[in-house]
Image (cartoon, rainbow, N blue to C red; front, side, top):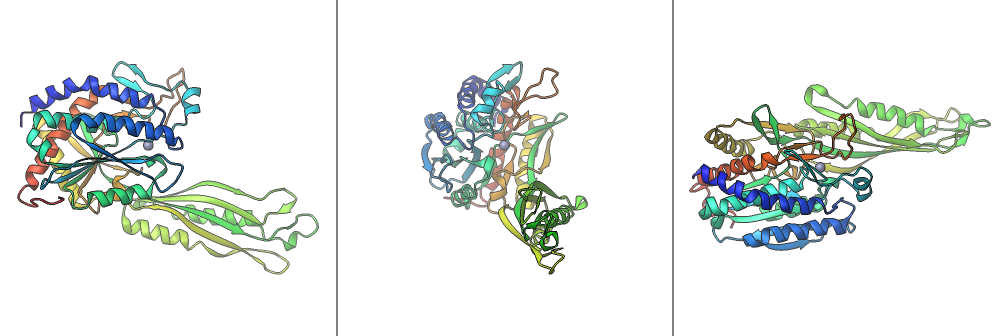
Length: 416
Ligand SMILES: [Zn+2]
């Protein structure tokens, strides 16, 4: 394949693609703003429509969220390839307004909500397909493309995970277009991510008058304080497991022995066994607590509920093979490509055990989830580097074709 042709094509398409990005960024799509998320979904469908993609909206499990979108360009007998991005952002409209956070280009940087997380990723996906259509039309036509857009990625949506797994079973690859990074001159791609489990800890004690009958009280706040310290000690830095006690509340008035208290805790780990062990240790905090009423030994009771769980995406062979295709394409282009492990979650966590999965294919940027700017420059909001779209597109297009060529004959016709 002619890489110079791919490069020319990517450069020619960039201004149009950035115009789409501007339109998406100017449309607030906070996860809680279903209307805005749907408007960005509509823009996304319109962007891909001229490439022959048909849109399908899928209602999310949570009624107050925006839709998930599936855009498909079916091809009989060709390998299926899944491309994944998300429509929502973490910024409520009031916050954007308060901080004057909007589309703003300064040199190579484009600031704005979702520029790198993850509207830039959606546009990088579009650029890759445009470039393949012109530069490798036989593959563009042969591949059974399935584009998946999560309407509520920032708040985690297990129903999107189920949707993506249903559509991508048997696919040749799942490519997740979260933002990538540079490490010196090298491009990094995400090849593993930690998993996360979220727990609520509730303590039920016994209330009492703090002046007249303190010995009757079983203090839920004291019990919870002991319990969250034990939870925090489930952290194991050597084995990359961390526990964060995120918030805590309890009691009502200072003249009462508090009868209830609660906290939320999250645990993250990379290795599935270390993850499972941490989860078991946190669930084991439930039961009769050590804090009791002096009068009759009435104990506090500790309840632990698992609220949410996303499995780790550990290093493993199918991702490694896919990564090596990107690494080889990088060599062809004269660039180093390196592996990156992230503590944050993405839709790749749902897919890696089903389909060869690679993440971080989006453009390069920084300060995701930050909308503030301070005059001294110590705070800067989210931005994407405009100059990263073309090289990343050429890399993605070339590497994907190399991967599909390598699959040919090995798994003919899979995924149709
Ligand atoms: Zn994000």
